[in-house]
Length: 483
Image 1 (spheres, rainbow, N blue to C red):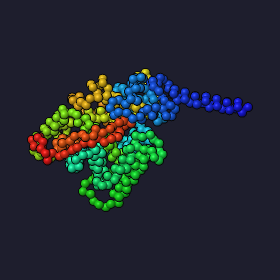
Image 2: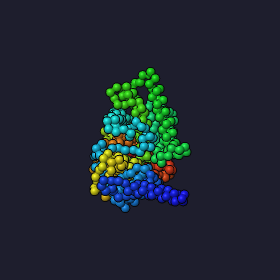
Image 3: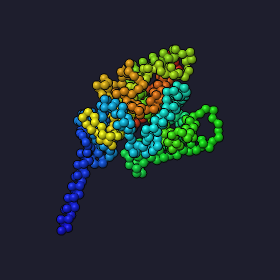
Image 4: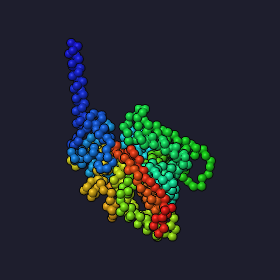
C-alpha cells in the first residue's frame, strides 16, 4: 500500500517537474518566437553568458548562437527570457520605438547597485528631467564654457606626476586622474578625500559585473558594501555643505543640485540627487580610463597613427601665438583625426556588452513575435565587428572614419548607446581622451613595458596591469629634446 502511494507521489513529482521544464523550454507566444535555447530552468544560459573570454572579437556566446540561429535569437539569462539582436536594422528600429514598444531596462541587481532612484532606474518624465539637468552640467555648452580648460589643467598636472614616477599602471593612473577631477568638481572633494572615496568605488566596480549572489565573501556582496560606504560619504558631504555658511566665489555642481532640490517645481529630490551623483562619478571615470588604456595598447604598434596625430597636434601649435596656452574649443574641434582615433578605440573596446530594453507589448519583427515582458538585448560588438559594415573589423584603423559622422550614433555605431538613451557623457569622454592624447604626445616619450591581460566577463576586466614607462620631454619646433 505504502509502496504504491510512494510510487504515485514520485510519479506526480516527475510529471510536475517534466511539465515545468517543458514550459520553460517552450514559452507561450501568440506567434512564432525567434529560434534559440532557453537553457536550464531559472539558470538559463547565464553561466555561458558570464564565462570569460578574449577581449578581442565578438563574444563566443553571441558568435556561436548567431552562427546557429541567425541575427535574432532567444535565450535566458539570470532568470529572464531574452531576445538578442545582432542585426543593425532591428537595433535601429528598437531605438526608434523607445517609450512606445520598448523601454530601457536593467536587472534588479544593477538598479540596486546604482541606486533605486538614479538615472537608470527612472524613465519617462523623470529620466528626461535628470538627463537634461546632467547635460547642463557636463554637456557641450558647459564643456565649451569652462570644463575644457579645467580638464586641460588637470591632465597636464597628472601627466607631469606620472613622468616623475617614471612608470605607471595606465588604467589605474588614468582612473585616479579622472576620479579626482570629478569628485572635486561634483562634490568639492580635495585630492585626499577623493582617493579615500575611490576605495569604496573600487569595491563597487569589482563586483558590478558579477553574479548577483548577496552572500558575505562574494564579489556582489562586496560591491553592495562599496556602494553603501560611498553613498554614506556623499550624504555626509551633502550634510556638511548644507550646514556650512561659507560663501563660494563660484558655484560648483553641488550648488546647482541644492538649488534644484530647493525648487518646489523641480522633480529633483535629495535621494535622487545622491543616486545620480553616485552613478555619474562612476560612469565618468571608469569607462574613459578603460578607453585610454586600450588606446595606448593599440597605439604602441602603430607609428603611422602616431605620426598623423603628431602632425595634427603640431599644426595646432604652429598656428598659436602662445605655445603653452590651454587648448581652446576651436582647437579641440579641429582635431578631426584625434576624434577618428577615439571613435576607432571605442568601436573596438565595446565597453558596454549589451544595451537592454523591456518589451512593453507584443512586437512582430521579421516574422517573429517577441512577447510583452521579455527583455530585448542589442549587442554592440556584433555590429562594430561585422565585416560587412567594417572592412577588416579587428584592425585598428582610424582612417576608416574619414568622411564619417564622428559625434553621433548610427545603425553601425553605438559605442555610446542609441535613441533617447544616448550616453549623456559622450562628449565629455571624447574631450578627455583628446586632451590626454594631445599632451601625452606633445610633452612625453612613452613605451608599453607590460602589455597587460584584458578579458571580458562579459564586461572588460583588467586582470593584469598594462604598464608604461614615461618621461618628460621638451619640444622646439616640434623636435624632441631631452628635458
